[in-house]
Length: 494
Image (tube, rainbow, N blue to C red):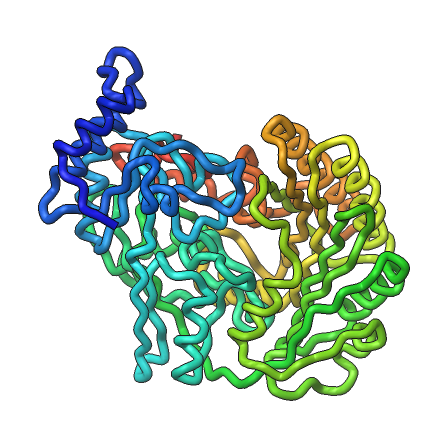
């Protein structure tokens, strides 16, 4: 990683043919001007040029279809540096994007043709034993944070997959292995350090800047960039966990096991996350099974044990990392779309299986599909009572009266020419599953969807319901120059 001076930038962009003048290409020229200005700041910022290792890392995303060719990349090391970056972005009106750990499938959400901001340097971590809180920067992955928390004998709510970043999950709401016990990740955040688009660095809590605190509870980056999250931490023991792999011949038995668990198990430490995945010409069931304690009470996972589940006692972080290695689609183009349900029936689970097989065959035979999968996530209704029901309303609505489980359908594919096909397919399949859930009385046409599980053209009303107008007013107050309009993602203010 090197510091890049302004003269080096001018030479590079001239050779690359990018110094074209404002009249020729305003967005590209604005980005060029911004990159040149960023190169003049003192002390020097960590600036990356196309082709450099830093640039390649800063612009890489888990979904290849979401990547874009940026003009330059920048890695701020402090909130003050981020303020300087936004000042230049506003002056030049340059397209930009902020990337935490790059777990993104929607183009423009963490990628840009302009200035790519990579938050990897903002990877601080601290634990306050007196307050029983942990603070960490947006450049961390949850799988980096968890082992550090375990050194103090505690844990927070956080990501379920190795490599998922702190920032995207936490600002979108955040489901986790702790949701049954603690609610969403956002329900556990007690303070945000925020760089606002108005040029301020604020410590945001429920009692200070309460409007921002409300907006940041699932409202993404509409109000600024969070540079530190402070979460409540809780004692952590060893856990029992495994990933059960079920062959096609046992899909019906698996469906009944999932249904039985969802209808009868009320132990908040027990968690399942079932996935039906079609790849390589067959469907396979993967069930992530976790008991958040050193010993599993009798009867909790009996149906899954009968299917071959073999639990192992391990640390929480060991389970997150090892379970992430079981299912993977590699580096590919990817998409995800949600459908919401308050529960499952055997007919709904069978439809999920049949849909995955039928369209998985088409997608992998007639198109460049690598995998098609359906995830039937399940959380206890009480999981949704840690937000507004507990006196802390949030941008992303969730309450016990509307316990919308974020079931979803996803795909991985190779060919860029298939991008529209798979986007349309995911939209269709999610709509079909949503309609089936509604027909069974398990959902409604206005069910709230989780913003981290949806395609990029999903209407904000679908995710934020009646909160949209409130959030739009907050965004107008804290983003008067519409800096957020220069990046992609879901926007409240028009």
